[in-house]
Image (cartoon, rainbow, N blue to C red; front, side, top):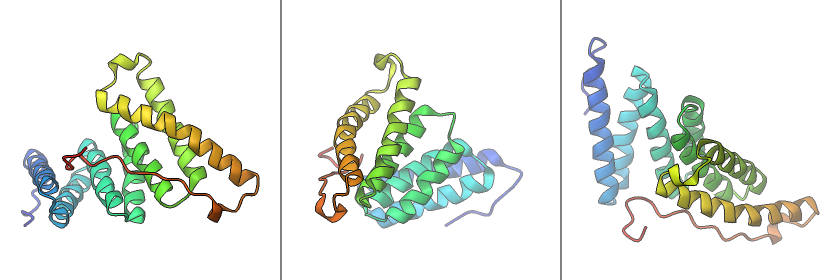
Length: 184
């Protein structure tokens, strides 16, 4: 499925990455997640090889979210952290990566790490968009959800610090609906 890599034609490789991203997006829309993972992984491998950092960061976020949605937090975390390492100049992408890392921590019941990532995401948003009206709408909705979640996480961490057995703490947390979910 992967064409031979031609080091002399980066434009053709970039176009191929974009084709695979599009095919992955379509597969998600049809709920063919294994196929989507395959397309995204092909795109990510070529983006890494060619150092298309913008596409690599986006793919780390999207493929990480797909793994997160299927509760594979280890793969999701690795991809999301990779994306953060290379996407530091794009606040929208970094916000998405951090938000997904909050979800990883929540699914793993690592509330301290979740609170830390949540604080990073809120701080990044507030610095990038001092005027909230300049932020993309979906980011504002995510910011509002994280802002509300912060209060709960602070209470949970406070209980943990007070010595409450973590097995006695239950936090109900639902992932944001994925883009391919019509209910989202």
